[in-house]
Image (tube, rainbow, N blue to C red; front, side, top):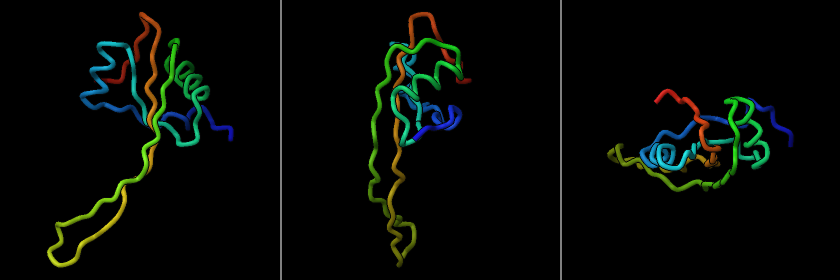
Length: 100
């Protein structure tokens, strides 16, 4: 499946762990389209941000059960969403400004 370059990257991950990876190792974390492969992710980051990507690592997260106990007599059961995450290693000297 050929994805448009603007559909590959969904949003950056701005957790404490992701920001530590960015500051220490020049690695940036993104939530990506579930069908995007490493080559598409690399091309999207290079073309959108104008940087050189050395390496891409991906992880698939499965849905996990969730329940809402806020309702007193009726429990609401559900699942979290499935998503794919990519950690992109940039070349030395390259940076991405994510506004944080």
